[in-house]
Length: 169
Image (cartoon, rainbow, N blue to C red; front, top):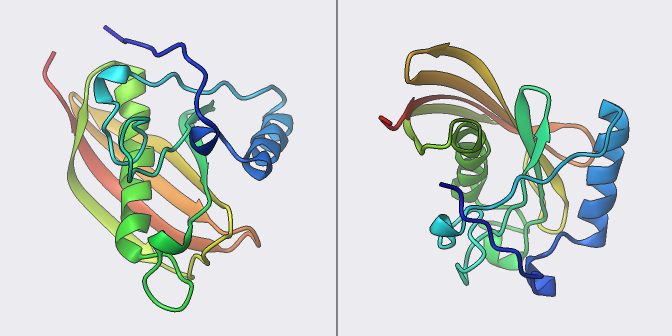
């Protein structure tokens, strides 16, 4: 059963003003205010979305048609070379955007069996990126998902196709 924390988040865990504006703009694009997906406190230490993980990414997810959306602004501690976001962390964002959608839709964890990704353009530290995941195909507990990360200029930074296995219920 979903256990939701009803407290007010500290400022460092909340969406930035820029991210709030981007979420509002996405809502206008879809014709309705986007609803944030409630977090399950059972997974508060999740590296990508957990509120209690001191070194986590603290992502906020929003429902969109057939998928999920998040925004992320990488900080200096997320870089590899010359002000660019580390590719491993970009992979984490893609994996999470796809897996979190299934977890929240189905109510059980979804484990990545395979992920194929392509890095296309760099993500600059300080640029707020758009992360989107969509379900593509399903056969029983096996689900194919696609994820894409887009830079502020509209260029695709990275894209992935993932095969995930839903946990047995």
